[in-house]
Length: 130
Image (cartoon, rainbow, N blue to C red; front, top):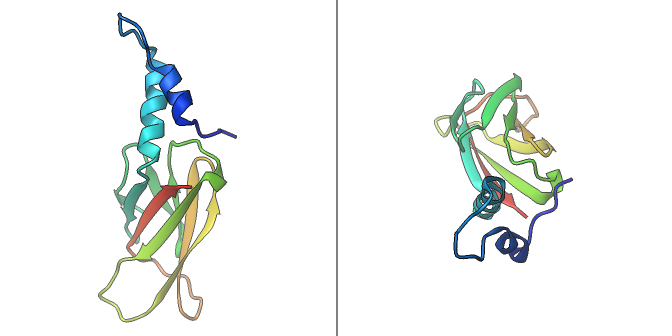
């Protein structure tokens, strides 16, 4: 479990001195925390390829209609939310998208037609830190 730092926690990691010395690990934590506040977005092709997304993230099709996006955030699964939108607008078949699992390093989502049949489609995701 990784607790989200407060602004005071982040500021305490930055130097308040004349030399400007700062530990690289502390700077990474500050930058990561600031980046997380903006959230993340990406796109996954029907074959599971991550078409767009943050550097270092990957995606895969686990099975028909089920995709897993792996990230390097290492935050509690309940510290973020994800919205999925099916992007293959050339078909008139409605698609239901749902998050099936979230962990500290990944989230999984499923796509199905209105009758519940799993389907592979191009999709977009938006992640927000709660």
